[in-house]
Length: 212
Image (cartoon, rainbow, N blue to C red; front, top):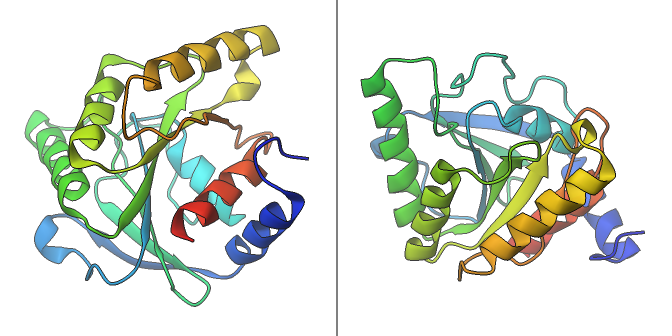
């Protein structure tokens, strides 16, 4: 039983996100953006934070989002729809370190910032943070950008199976204290593991809550 959502909310989210997922297109630059005609949910995070693995776990699909051990593999804004296509699910390029030419990394970063600043249908950004490392300077930069753009966001800790319970609780507490200073931050920090499928029910309910 979730401390945040009711059994009915979790069941409804499971039903919705169990429907067929469809890849719409990859957006290499803003001129190729899809029309802003429906709610959008975006997933952001540092390179190699486990974003693709978590998206695949949420969709219960093995290869919906491409996973790689090479940081910086996602190079576009990848748009998906679920079920009847009533909302977009956006997989954003990883920010921070990437094994790519500096100019290309800067282009991805500019794309991320432009999208976050100018998308009126963006309902919530789920910012993924590796539980082993906590918030880094580059994460704080993105959080400040989201505050400035007045885009609601929620922190999702990843890879929690790599930590002992006491260490996880300390990291979660530190993150909660940090985001208390950010006006656009959703106050509840979610803790997940794609590998062990931990915390997925609450994450799915948060996604559906954001687009409701």
